[in-house]
Amino acid sequence: MPKQPEHQVGGHEAGPGKVGPLVDDSGHFYKPLHPGDERGTHEVNFYTSFSSDPRIPSSIRSFFPAFGGTKLLPTSDSSDVLLPHLVLEDLLHGYTSPCVMDVKIGARTWYPQASESDFDKYLKLDRESTTVPLGFRLCGLQVHHESGRWKPDRNKVRKYTVTDVRQVLRQFVSKNPDETHPDCALASSVYGGSNGILAQLLELKSWFEDQTLFHFYSASTLISYDKGGMAARVKLIDFAHAMEGEGIIDHNFLGGLCSLIKFISEILTDTEAEVRPANNGIV
Amino acid sequence: MPKQPEHQVGGHEAGPGKVGPLVDDSGHFYKPLHPGDERGTHEVNFYTSFSSDPRIPSSIRSFFPAFGGTKLLPTSDSSDVLLPHLVLEDLLHGYTSPCVMDVKIGARTWYPQASESDFDKYLKLDRESTTVPLGFRLCGLQVHHESGRWKPDRNKVRKYTVTDVRQVLRQFVSKNPDETHPDCALASSVYGGSNGILAQLLELKSWFEDQTLFHFYSASTLISYDKGGMAARVKLIDFAHAMEGEGIIDHNFLGGLCSLIKFISEILTDTEAEVRPANNGIV
Image (cartoon, rainbow over the protein chains, first blue to last red):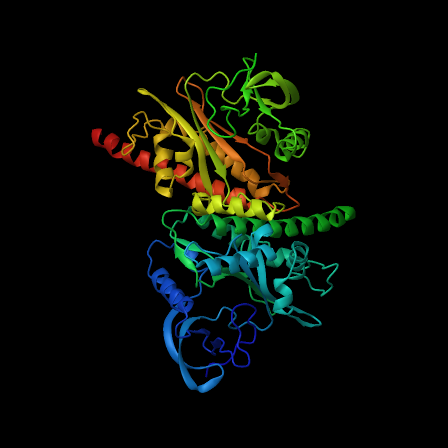
């Protein structure tokens, strides 16, 4: 029986009078498709076309949630109302203590075909957030510390400054929940290593330097790892505004991705620099 | 005696009642500094700070014109009026038949500190040109063909569409001036090779993936080679809106640069593909 997800950090959440996504025990994530909302239709079309496109390398395909078509289901707020749902892979299935960040990539979230009022709305959000200065913004996060779960309010996350983002990217890989001096104790195992977040982001970057098939406006990277032991993972989500690339690379996504990569590299460099003198001191 | 440059393709040109830049026989380029124009002062400040910054690798420094301070000179339109000029290296000094493109890099030319009216003006130009879709736009060009010099009017260049840009990047390395079927005969020697345009752009790209010192809004790459035999060269110019990077990479410039790189790579791939079957046919 599908139920509301425990660990959602971004996207449209269920609330009083608001229909939200569902998950089940078999690892499915169901995203409601509201009648008349073009974004849902657009996202189904994207997944349909993407999942059968032979030009996507399989190593890149694994960055995207598996797609299972659509399914009629009772909505999250009423068992009497049936609504079509987009069927996707539940990216946090099996996690016991998931640490998750939803990072919306790109220095602009407006797309060429947007109406003038949408254009104004998205541009305003971009200028008021870190989207313009950083080329990405945080949309939501949760971190499990020994002392419990830290899940800042999404309205607070939306107002993060550049300094806040720099700090949160360190807190995300820290054992202590200290906001001023995060220990970054997990940086090398989560961000670093041959299968870590940085390596995965670099693999994505290589593809984005070359691919001219899609432009991903307002899409996010979902960065996750499990305090319960599961490996660090990067996935791409939210394709309500994915567009045809028309032979041009997605320089907007690529630029933002490179900016995120630089921040994460710096955390790794700083962490290694902190460890090294101590080791040398013993010799 | 400084005189007006013969081969300027971008920037503020001299004209009736308009003061323009000057060049001399020793390889200097003099850019007039108009009293009260903050952009000139800003550019002098940028060159002053950049030229003494020890954090710039020498391989990267060579992408920038050499800087020689400022100098009081009679203006281009009157020997009676003295104006301070920014003294730079004349990037086309010694060329006999220079082929030049001024490519303004970045998907946005407005900068955070711009006034709201400047912001509106720049954003409009970005949306009406290829700046938004491609991440770069052509500001001017000239090409020498056997039949003469082709230097399209700058107002025409400003209106280039994505299709036009794709075509002009091929015409730039063609022997024939045919607008519909450029032969790309010089692509491998100008764009390709270990010292060609592509290799230089890739070296710049590596630096932009890492450097957080400067953000180059509205700056251009000047791409040139000489039909008279000089090597292909990439230089960065126009720093009236160069800003402090504040620890963030210039994802706007980097994204646009990667887009230009992709276009040039494709021309090389297409050209090689056309050559290869003919060679194989002989064997």
